[in-house]
Image 1 (cartoon, rainbow, N blue to C red):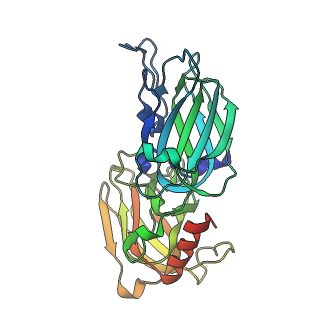
Image 2: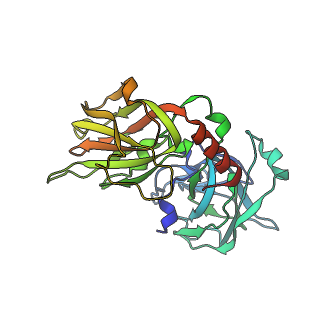
Image 3: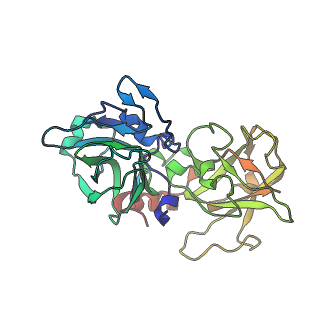
Length: 343
């Protein structure tokens, strides 16, 4: 897969996205396009409309025109690449597709988006059947909606829209927010191990659905411990940390520790152990299948741009939350990002 596929999927259902309109969904529903799981298929599963597919499938065109689906991104941002996955569609996939994007304030109805300033981010391109068709995107503007066009008709299992989240500062400034939320622009920038699942899962919206919907490492057989470093949404002052081990019954870490650092420049982060890192939460015991909340002491409340989570010795974390307020500098940088795109 391309490097852009490691970025958050802005069009994922569990990241609050929605398919708000489609030209046709005669065979399979448009909502399947953004399901979080890999497409499934079972031969000879026939419903009233024919073979059932885990995707979006339109009727056969008998005249001019083409089909389309309109997706509201769950998190606005700069799109770095698109995956049009035609898994299991072998004789009924569209031979060509294109993708357009626009930026629209609020929650417009599909009809109101007709007059939006749509930009073509993926030109009309050939697709392969039963394949993940990857298309990098070079446009660095912020978008809130995309439109998938298929020519002339057929089936698409999934649409993945990978990019860098840029939150609307009007929804964050002056409030206590989750500085480590993916939807607020936080990202994992390093980790020791992600054998079972990626650490960005800890930052996803909502509660973990199951054991796989968090971050889990392989079993450590040597010395040391596992860890993850997170770039916060922007500079802020953490006041409460939540480490949730829900669904992790026999593989939760025994203890955890959280460090912070205020590092707003472009240089690489100093290694843990450098005096610039400070302790937010000392090494603390954790329980399985438990949402732990730790209010920081007054002496621990300092401004930070990154945090470092140590788990001992290994295991899984369902969700990590860092509640706090943005600093004036953090707010200012966020406004620039919202106006101009990703730094």
